[in-house]
Image (cartoon, rainbow, N blue to C red; front, side, top):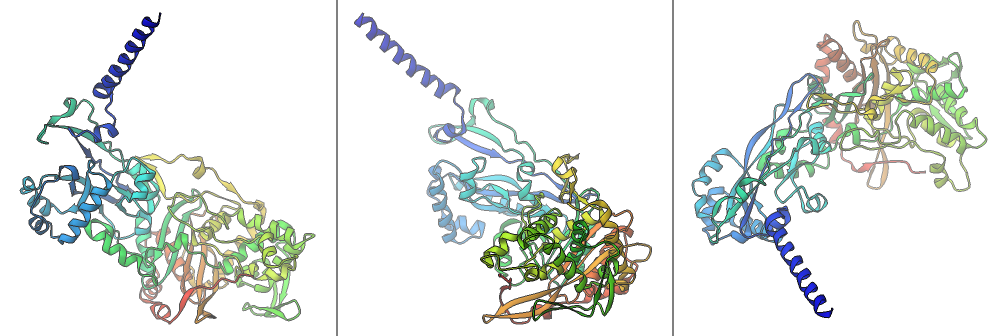
Length: 620
């Protein structure tokens, strides 16, 4: 019995060893094992990255061929470094640094030594490659931009770093990945899938043909094309209007949430971040901490919304029943509250109803409304939480969960926020009164204001803003973008506010900005602007803000414009809003004198004023 058991153990052990050897030599073709095989060379076949089009089918981003010089450190033989560097026009120190980096990454896996050769450099080097054992040339694609606009939307591609490689094993050293904009957000759609070729080598490390006759090689799968919601002509026009200004323009289609234009200023040409000049150009853009061309003000810039927020104050007041469309408040030119506090008003003096309060931007009317909303409840905390819920239902104070690669949620304070700064509930409605007019602690981004405007235009609902319309000509059918989000305000409350916004253009603060044959509803805004200079809080030139939608009865466009240091609302932002609306709805601009003023007007002198630090935020 013992003898039989010994034989059985020997037979089973032999079967296990034979099976394992058979598996490793015949069936195991995984990338990991093959990459460790001295007799196999792996070459990746990179796919064409998906193209990008605008909503009208205009090509924005395509591809151009590029060539990378690769090295497999274990196959490297002594070579003439001076000749190699001379051919590629690189310093010897850089070559040595790249070779050390490649060896640290892997001695068996290829690394990029010199990326993105031109066609001429490639042709010249190809003739001499036999001199440089261990090096080879890898073909791949770079982006080819057919537009000088929308860099913040399109983004760029760049070489992966070690953190990305560790996070996603699809990428290896030298691969390119989308870093901003739709290139980043839709990376997996655009990149396609790499093909792989396995080359058999002999004992002298010479290529002798495809491994297993190419049966396990894979072909690359091209990336899918994107069709954006952007109207390129409108985007370009917006960027032209914003020359020598800082701020953002966001234009939405209210009936779909599609982003028609997303302008940030200052910006840059997308082509600056392509090829071997990408790195130094990016460094220059990144280090410009004054103009911040890489900072997308349309979605990342959080500012006090100013008077456009009064439309929301009115809607909340109507919903809470503290006002009706017939309610009136007498304005003496100043609203007094507390023992010594007061809020100035520039609407003149007289009795203000809801529509005239909106059209003439009466601080007194909206401060009274806001205070009544908060004080309606048993405690200011309960009132503030209720107010917060109404505001957030318009997409404020939170990320919109759109398909953009960056954003800022802004701030809509609640009761807990003020409890932290006033221990023991030592605060009331008047403590937070600046919120009523879009100042105080409230901050919003231009895209949030545009979304709020679309919700007003739709009388109580909005669609999540999004930038991609179709993938490979198949329309996006994601319920997140196609299902409307309802606000907490009943539909019947929107009509008087919309009428007030219409009167802003017919007889209010924007009456000089009417567009012939188009009924526009809008709201001007002037936002106070503070910073710290030498440790002191200093007030700078106000920001200029404007929101609008048009036409009044069948909205096709909703827009928010924010101009840093742009003075009052109708001066800078209002003019740009008016021109953008006419450009989109008519296809051309009739008020060329207004257009000329905006194009030639610069705010660079304002931005050149000496200041230091970040914009000041009141923290109570």
